[in-house]
Image 1 (tube, rainbow, N blue to C red):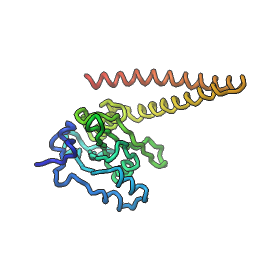
Image 2 (image 1 turned 135 degrees about the vertical axis):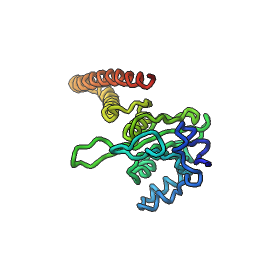
Image 3 (image 1 turned 135 degrees about the horizontal axis):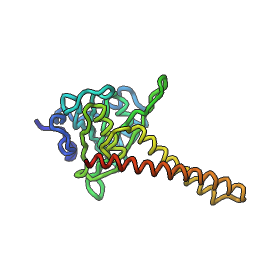
Image 4 (image 1 turned 90 degrees about the vertical axis):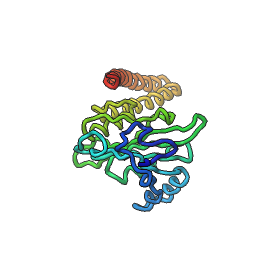
Length: 247
């Protein structure tokens, strides 16, 4: 069987099982399939037109194609190559595509630059929500990397664990998906504190009187203390997960 491929990227190049590969005849998905049902805004339709070259389904990960049992929440994961006309990853396009299906999706956004073929992995993940509250999602982009260094590792006994691991590989560059939502929340808090630190440092430097300068300094010290503690705890936890990756 000839398998689906985009510019050299395929299920096999990503180190996925051959049993998960999509046949070449079924791989390419017409762009109009993503812009007609449901109808999209003219702005988003323009983004598809100017940013996306092709969308190719490379692999379908589910219990009958990989060695994993069905999950309680995740039943399958699609792996899509999104060929780009421009270097920037169109996050709104990926958000729209992922929202069209309830299954998990791993995107491999692909573009060319002076270094050659570059791949940026991405996933859209549901955030933990309290009962009765609307589920929110966040799109996570991984680090851009050369095509020959872009792989996906299947870790987990069931599809829930496989999905968590794939999300961890994209968002945290680790295969261990245990306690992932908490780890992602900590990382988000750290990024927020870094932004607050930069703002408060600027406020402190621009303060025109002692009272304002002292107030900004007190807030800055509080933010830095929390940031230091969270960063230390986060490094220690991720080092443990990294050790489990290598074991």
